[in-house]
Image (tube, rainbow, N blue to C red):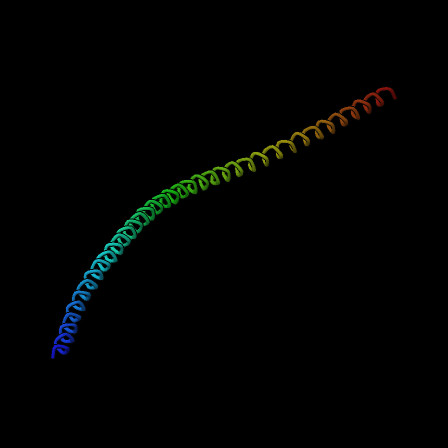
Length: 134
């Protein structure tokens, strides 16, 4: 009987120590769980901050892109205006060139006409002198 009581006490004492061990394990697991949750929360906060920074950077990039597009549109307008002015200048130069060529031809025609008239006058004078001498 004594032996059974000791065994019972040992078993019961073992259960008590088993229960104390379980509580200690549960407490240890609870602390580990809290640490894991804390670590995950910190990671989540860092990730959120990175996402916010990325979003802000994307907005800034979009704004810069919009400014570049506006500048390109203005440059395109300037280039089109310059092209139109060059086309007008080209048209004016073409007309001026035609006018100068026409004037040059008339100068040549006038010189040829003066030369022909001079030759005719010389021929008339030579014929008149020849007729007077004969």
